[in-house]
Image 1: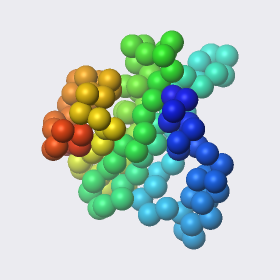
Image 2: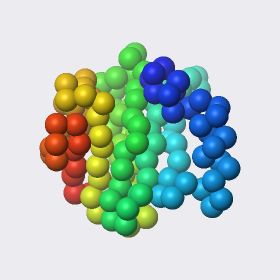
Image 3: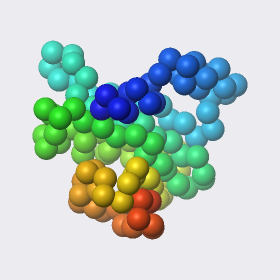
Length: 122
């Protein structure tokens, strides 16, 4: 999660996204999961950059909160949001063929388009 935040949540990047007139095309924003004390335990981001195709841009769960349904809930919420914007397919691109998140995405019904690109019908 720290790597994701440092890459995706840097102030210059957020400022650039905010300053795009009308917002970034297809960007649906961030979803954040917190524990009962309010600490962030997971984040997801996505959009519908191409009509009919949702894209999971980021999904991360803190190490101590994994295998508790946080990632599943975040993906479900992101998927619902994408569907409401017309997505019937959903894609994700992983940083490497052996990414640790691969088993999660395959359990969620994603199939391989390439070694790092995965897709499912929603």
